[in-house]
Amino acid sequence: MKDILKELDKAFENKVRLGIMSALIVNKYVDFNRLKEILEVTDGNLASHLKSLERKGYITFKKDFLGRKPNTKYSVTVEGQVAFRKHIKAIERLLG
Image 1: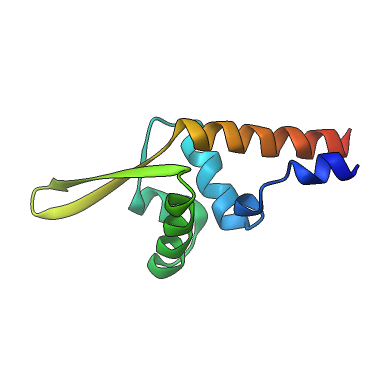
Image 2: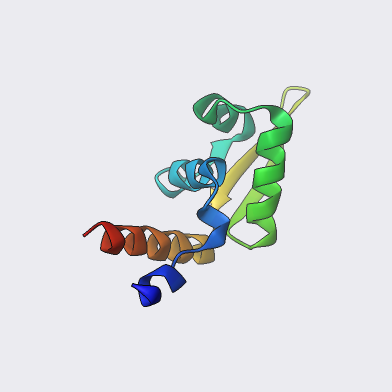
């Protein structure tokens, strides 16, 4: 059991970060407003969790403009995919 617990990544222990990664792992990208809608969080709350995942190198972003409005799109990195899948597999092993 200790070996399995070591495979859990603290970056995904928060439900918002878990939700962000879940949305990004199944989509090529998701924009900020859509993530906010899906997760039902405030701008500031979402921004802080996105920043945390960015610092870990798990997600990346691209800023565009739709007309005059900024639009930030987020996507998961290869490192993020590997880490998230490892985390989910560890949870599955704990439950199995």
